[in-house]
Image: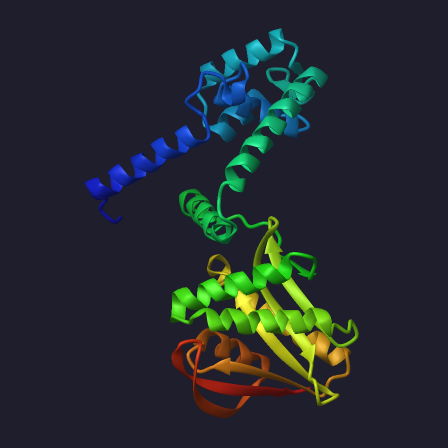
Length: 309
């Protein structure tokens, strides 16, 4: 076990104080209600489970049995809770939220949604991926058992092109020092994609989880060669790297290219993008040419890769 320093303990406690203040858990009633944070969480479990027991609730929430018993008695007196004897064990009661309990939970749930929306709307859009990445990391590390919602690949919709340009420009600037001229290039690529879109030959995939965009890839028709497609703008957010997302995106792109009748897929990349090269190589692409150039404010070596289908 790694030794924990006093500075690390101080930082951990500082974050806890900040977060509990930020979401209002120090108030007597959560979200201006008459229920504490613990009571609201117990009501959440009752309302979202078809049925449960006191023992299951105590284990799920890590609550003292006596403390939980007092909460359940209050709920029962207020008509928020129904209980009946378990058919398999007469010593146990089956618990569930009453209709009134579900109504109270629905109100609390809506208040919580409004609070979350208000907080997130105050965060710059470009910072949201980093925020959710940090939240996911904390959840995964402290639970010791990462739980991920399904990854979804979908086609583009209004708003996606702005996200693609912004995220690529920000990450290439952070990781490689590229300037705003790359952002201009990406903007031209997505503008051409929209203006010249042909659903039989062109496609964009956005990868998302929990409504958060994590990556993208484009396949577009070559402006001069009929049976040649161009792979463009492969991108994977930091929070999603190392999970095989880039491979999934490239595979989907190749599948579409074959179905569209392309004979070859080509792409333009830079020699420093080693992680992308690994993905292209695994998919069967071959490096066919290299050319030094000065672009995006730095010296680079451009590469052309091709895949015969």
